[in-house]
Each structure stands twice: as structure tokens, then as C-alpha cells.
Length: 395
Image (cartoon, rainbow, N blue to C red; front, side):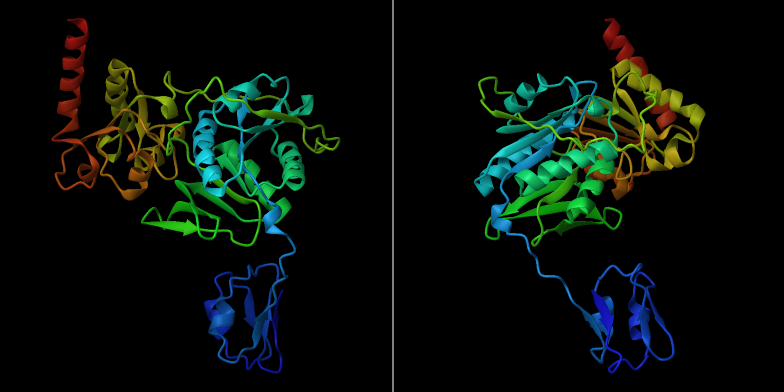
């Protein structure tokens, strides 16, 4: 709770000037705070020279020592577990080891019990299963209700999910329901071994810095993690684990009804899973020129990517976008054609095993991360590459 001490306020307006939410107005020489806008950032408290603003925080009533376990939300569609889940299980095992606790997986759906074995083989010590016809199709409100109940009952200290469309829509709802913090789009997770808390690393300010965020006072500590930034957990067929099946009576949100799922038409190769990606940027010059990128990707058996500039220009659909606001990829080979290499793009592809850059500007930032660079006109170079690859494949 935040309040203004009337006897100390002189109406100087310093608090209103520093408020990032524009929540403070000076009325009749007195600071008035709009509580609906205020996010308790404390900027006004620091700015006030008269000690006229006070924030009273409720004491934490949770016993943090009762929270144990590192959980992973096991996102699935039509019975197929998303690849990012296996990446998270690998990292969860490391975190759990540092905290001397167990690794848990949460699996929701209908007629999916056989998938619990797959999660155990990938590192889960316990699988929390809720199998119900209502959960057959993903509806954020239904899933968040179930997981909120699981979290309150079993009290894990960490809860992780993939930074996918599903993960992002789900975990934010859960964090609000259980009154805890959430760090989105993480690229790194570690344990502060002295304080026993989770250090969550994510790009900030357009990718120009890497922020480290902690949630010291609330549990569980929650984060969504980008796909392809962590290696997947290996398969250990002999692993043993426990399946805990729960049944909850209040699951369905009556306000929402699933009607149909319209699948997005993607290219023949899934960008997130491709071993080879050929991406085009502003240097492509227009939508019609992406046929060169598509042809090179086709002869290589790869997928087509793009920079934000190409997507914003309307040359290619958004689902091809690689970068901070698009997809994070980690192929064996990444070929950047006409892409300058701004930090926002590099965040999404710099973990690629081999990076090849084609750009006529020798000072383009992309060359600083590229394993091989070709300085020249891509409209001359790409046709030559296509011709040569076809010759090699036909010989």
C-alpha cells in the first residue's frame, strides 16, 4: 500500500515528474496517487525530499522452506510433447541438483498417460498428470486453473515453461493467481548457491544488455524460456519415476468454448527444428526476390528465415522471423543473406553451429559473428551457390 502523508507534503511536484506510470497529480498543493495506475516502483519515495510518501508492504506470510522441487510445464498438442520441454527438463535436472531437490513435470490433456514414460526417460522424477476430456484442447483459462491448484497443493520452488505462444499465455495467468513473480523469454537459468534462489537471465533494452532477475521473497519462482537456447535432455530408458495422477472437480471455464483449431500453413520444413536455415533481410530488396532464398533453402533441404525488417516490409509472413521478437533458432548451418546483423536478430540465431554471411557491406555487424563471410552482391552469389550445389548433388 502507498500513501501520502499530508502533513509532510508541500506539493512540490517532484514525485509526479519521476513517476513512470503518470499515477501522481498535484491537486490543491497535495500529491494524489491513482492506485489503479501505481505499480509501487518506489521512484516517488526516492524523489521526495520531505519523506511525504510511504510504501507499506505486507509481510510475506509464506514459509519458503516448505517449497521443494523444480517443475516443468510439459506442453503438448495432439499427444506430441513440444521439443522445448525436453530442453527444460535437462536444465531442470541441473537446477534441482544444485538445490538438492527433485525434478517434476506437469502433464495435462486427455488420454495421454502413456506420455508420462517419455518425460521420466528425459529426467522427470515425478510426473503430475491430470487427464480429463476438458483438457483435450488447450484453453488457457482451464489449464491455468488446474496448474494453479497443483502449485498450491505441492508447492514447487521453481516452475518453468517454454516461451511459446502457449507458454506465454498460460504462465502469466498462473503468476497472477498465486501472486508471484514471472520472468519472460529467459535465455539462461542458474542457481545462486549461497542464497539458494534462481537467477533468471534475459535480454533487455532491445537485446543491448542481459538482465539478471531474481524472485527472493515469493514462490514458486517462475520463468518462460526460449526454445533452442538449451540442449535437450538425453533419453535414459532405464530411469524410474513416479506418476502422480490428480483429479480436480473445478476445471472448465464455462465462459469459453473450443470450436476449432486452424493450423497455420508453414513451409515444408519447420523453422524451429531445421538443421539448415537460409534467411533473407533488407538487402533482398523485395518480396519477389525471396524466391532466391527459397530456392537455396530447397536445394539444401533447409527452411526459410527472415529478419524483422523483411517481415515488417510485408515481404514474407511473420512465422519466418528470426530474432528477439521472432523465433530463436539453433541450426547446424545458418546462412544470412542481406542481413546487417543488428543485436535483435543476433539474439535469435547466434547459437547456430555454423554461420555464413552474405552481404555487400564489409562492415556489417553480421560478419563479427559469422564463421564464414562473403562480401558481394547476393544476387550474383546465391545463383552461383545454387548451381554449384545442384552440380554436386547430381554427380
